[in-house]
Length: 119
Image (cartoon, rainbow, N blue to C red):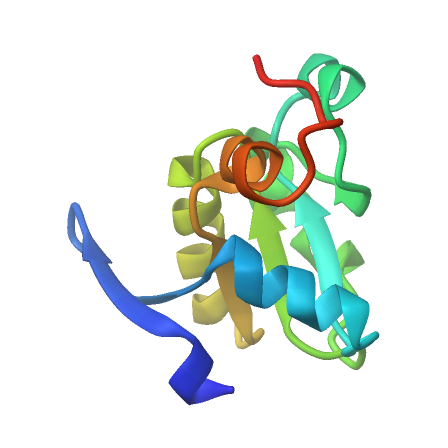
């Protein structure tokens, strides 16, 4: 998996792993174990949704223990991939294997599933 992920330094956040939408699409097609977390706000999830458990970023520090740690890596997504980078960094510090979906749901809609609304 490490060869499929890249490490990113972003505004002081070091070694946050990202997964491309094409690689994540492959994971889903192969039923690879993972936990999907959406760190957007509820109204964003109502507009466009990849599934997964909703924990808005401002609530993550309080709610991160809700995330199962025995179902594979935690894949985190948001609108464009910025909030998910911060979330992945936080979850890595808590001892979870976490990756950010590069480009977020916007990239997913543009590159994988155009039926998911752009906003």
